[in-house]
Length: 345
Image (cartoon, rainbow, N blue to C red):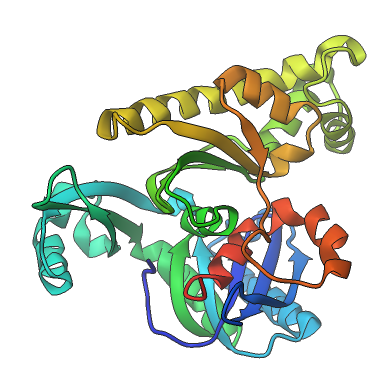
């Protein structure tokens, strides 16, 4: 599923708010093989800016990263922030792909809460519906202003665009081996978190929640009267541990984590209404949250679900000598790794 689409060799590019990351793979009959990966830090606020000069700066960082990692192609699949994506599962009569495309063009305004002339629309066939005469389709839309910004940056970087894809879709692909089970994936970024429910390896619900690791740090700074650097250190040293500093850091962070838990609970309820016979098996966590002490235990106790730390390299082959290094940065690379696997697995 991509908002642009043609087949070729490519690498995955994740333009995040705190860093830009890429992963390049090559197919090998089984698991795709890791060719190269890397990241470059991004100054605060740069990727959220719409100024032409800031787009040039991002493009320069992308070019620097490509040089540093020695990527062997200009073809790219790039991630699109889930905050800029609307996604919904719809049920349709069983039709050919061509007829599905026509039907969606006529009916999209019933499902998308934005004017159709302001969005790019895409869809992906999920499989059979509740009966033999129906199918389920994942409908995705993104504002043209948002996609045009990414396209402009990529073109200024000298790249050929294969596709733009929702970050949450890429994360689901990276963290899930082929399976029929249903899981919740929570990816905590710098400023927001992506919540995705995946069933039979396809996203069935995608949500962006405006709470990220930066929210935790800000709460610690305000509650403990610390500067940003001190708050960052306290957040990642003490986290949700109740026995340290009389639990002051825990008290600062926990209300925001509880919002994430609440959104997980609501999303599971929504999923259960559509798939009443399907049980959510576990919660997979990735992103900046997993570096916070006691975070995974807190999520397990609060949601009642088994919690697993996602492995971005689970579907990728690489030398055993690289395992320790790759696993140490796994939580940072789910988007880029998933984008790089878009048609290889």
